[in-house]
Length: 234
Image 1 (cartoon, helix red, strand yellow):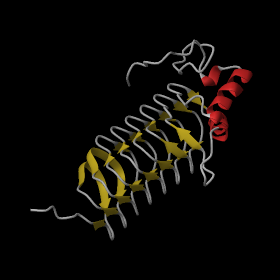
Image 2 (image 1 turned 45 degrees about the vertical axis):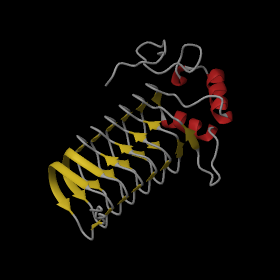
Image 3 (image 1 turned 90 degrees about the vertical axis):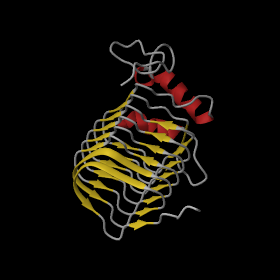
């Protein structure tokens, strides 16, 4: 984990990025917090929440404040949760992430879901820690999915994920089962030096480009897995 390079909250022991009045969003007084959320809603500020501790209630207020897409999804624009800590059950279900999105070195202390979330650019989860169950079921990645050295301590579900670019998992640790059933990866898939403590399931998965699986995998299951590799021109 790198040394924070943002202006830090002056609350004792907090590394959250200053949102206003030398405090992070979690430690702002109620009136100042409402003003920050209003600014998120009108687009005059971004969700720069590095190092911030986010409860489910605080995250819900953020998602309720941001603009909505035409299909009524919360639209988080260029969000940065580098080294943020999510303290309870966390839901980013159906959230639309505009621009590069950062969860690098973030810690999810309870269950987290990104079910049917949409990432329209690169998504960075490098060295993130998922302490309990993590679900990306039905998520769509238009850019690269970066998962270098991510740690999944509970079940990890990537069922029906679509990735239009590369999916990078080098050095990732998955303590239990990892379900990649039904995934559709149009770019390269790199699972080098991974450790999977349970089953790596690739049921009905589809890969259009080269796939690398290298590491310690307790059980690998491929059923109706499709490798649609295109022959390169001579």
